[in-house]
Image (cartoon, rainbow, N blue to C red; front, side):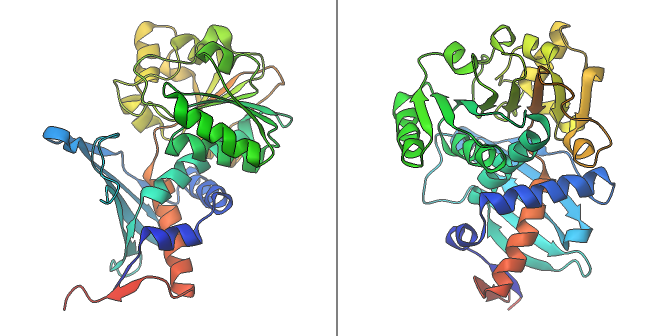
Length: 325
C-alpha cells in the first residue's frame, strides 16, 4: 500500500516552524555522517517543459529515503498541474510508502533552510530585512526569518511592483512595517538581513552597499546562468553553503565570483550542517558580514517528507492505494 496525499493535506500538516525544526535536524544528521546525499541530476527538456531535476537522499534515523522530481519552466507552469512530486520509501523494507506533491514542501524547506542559517549567522538583534523577490519563495523567506528573529521592518524590491505591494500590505496587516523599495541599493542599505529569491541574471545585491554586520540569504541563483550577489559580496563575507559539491556546480553567482578571481573556493567557510553541530563557528563579531549560499538539497525535502508522512498517518489523511492491484 502507498499513501497518496494532496497539496491540501500537506498544507494542513506543515508549518514554517515545523519546517525549520525538521530541516535543522536534517542538516545535523548530514553533518554527523548519518545520511546519504546525492547531487541533483539535471536534464534539459524540449519546448516549454524546462528541465527535469531529480534530488535523492537517505535519512535513516528519520525513517526513510526518497526522491523529489522538479519539472517545468518557472513562469510557464499551469496552476492546475503538478510539477514538484516526491516518492517516499521505507528505509527498512525499501517499500514505497507515499506519493506526495511537493510544491508547498519545496517552499517551506527552502525558507526553512534560510531560517536555520539566519538562526546561526544573523545578529541576535537584527530588526530590518531587505527582500528581493516577492513571489512564492520570497514570502517563505520572510516567514522563516520572522520565526527566528524579531523583525520589525521589511523593505521589498521586485521588478514587478504589484506583488511587492501585495506582500507589503499583508505584512502591514500582521504588524510589520513594510515598504516597497525604489531600487536594489535602497533595499540593501540599512538592512540587518537580506534575502534574495529571484531568477536574476545580473546581481541585485552589491558588496559595496552591504552595511557592517549584515547577513545575506541568497537562495535563487541555482543555475550557472543566474546571479543574485556580486563577487565583492562573496569577498566581504564569511560564506556558508548548504552542500558544497552541488553549490560549486550550480550557483551562478558563486561560480562567477570564483572565475573572476575575487573569491577562492577554499574560502568557503563551512557547510551549514557543520555550523549547526558546532564543528565550525558561525558569526564571530557584530560587524562581520555573513552569507548563506543555498541551491537546495534533497536532505531538506526527504526530512520534511518523512515528517509529513508520519503526521498524515497519525491523522488518517490521504488515500491508501494498492498500486499492485
